[in-house]
Length: 220
Image: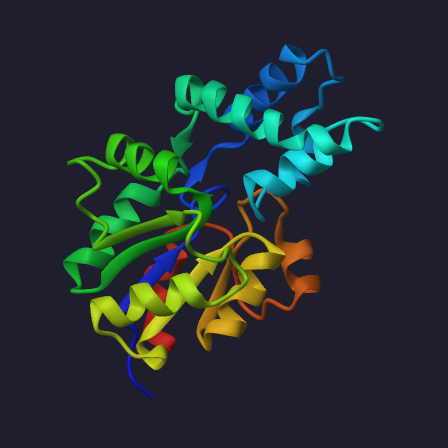
């Protein structure tokens, strides 16, 4: 079996704790229209699939056809507040640098909109996000996870086989994404849903700290 040469990461709940800023931006957008707001825990159940999914499930009864306006307002709010409290998880920057020093290529493949993912990672992972060989977020022309298109595209452009690639994420959609892409998967117990959720979703490997990646890849 080939050793791992490319590790691709989810972003929200994997590389960075973004929940507070996602939730506050959603609540600002909801309040803009006079809609009820949500707790962080409630928002965590809406995150991961897409902004459209989140907003479709956040609009109150009677406003089901108004989700696009909420999406547009969320983008406005999030552009202004995406890094108010968001930080990388403890140990993540150091782990990424250690992986890169071992010659492992790093990528981020996420359902977070591309227009937010790129500036966030450039800001939070200096210098200018250069740890990542590729950052690919959701754009209108590409299907979202768990469709394997984005992962296949990134992997092929970087020149790695499925056997050489590991995907790391914290959601059930990430487990399915890795499966659909034919990749090994490692779950993040520190993410938005926790270890039990990932195990139930089918994850065979779940880590509790980012540093565990350094030993894990030796076994693959």
